[in-house]
Image (cartoon, rainbow, N blue to C red; front, side, top):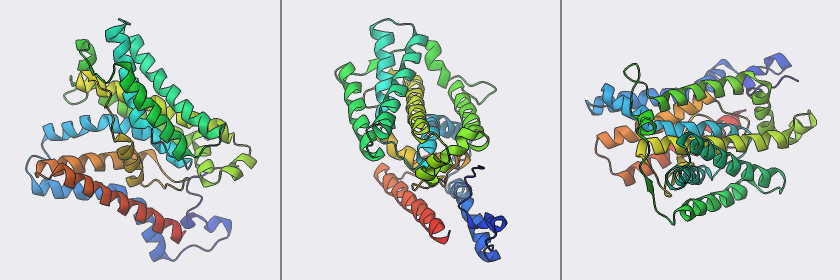
Length: 336
């Protein structure tokens, strides 16, 4: 059975004997698919006119550097939302992973490379815990990941009794500071490589295409022979692994591990995926769209900072953007 993430779109149903939509409606359908990119371009134009520093090379590099943590987590969240799930624990998983790394390296004296691997394993274990609660205990994703969020945040604070861990080797901090080829840090390069790999998997691999089938209807996917529970567990495990990796990247930027790290990042991560065109109902989403969503949030916050907007107002603006993105998705689903 061929699995296509766009199978729910009426624009592509003519081959199945269904009359195509009128040209004007089909054009609107295609235009709505490019809203994330058009929104990003519009924001860039507005902020470039509002401030002279927005388009400076230094500012654009800062935007990219600041987006790395959010972007890495958003890759995993894309797969979670595509299968019709949600993960509220990624911010807390980031925190407990970075605290575990700091505790192992700075307190127990474990070599830094091994401590990094341990942080990734902690993140993957947290994601697997959420996946098992969903697939084996049959808990709703919202409840399962909410529980994992609370447990992970508690463990992050318990490791050092709420204290941060400061001071890492120079080579570790340099991963996000030193720029190669004049603009590319190791952490940004890592994010770009992961983005390409994730996009290729979601689009061209059978496992990636199966995620869209699960999001469309998990029961139909099961009857079609797709291992729904196994793939769901894998998706949440990878999402946790990427959250752990994001914790490592954040530590390179801060030169410390903080139990409060990643606070509120779960909302930003979900927002980036939704702004990028993914549907919370499942079955729709793409890595390219998520990249546009991540860039949109980064550009929006950076531009508002440059024009002196209050951080509280920024939260309101981003909330409005999320509402608009969900409204667009709801209208698209109604039209289909």
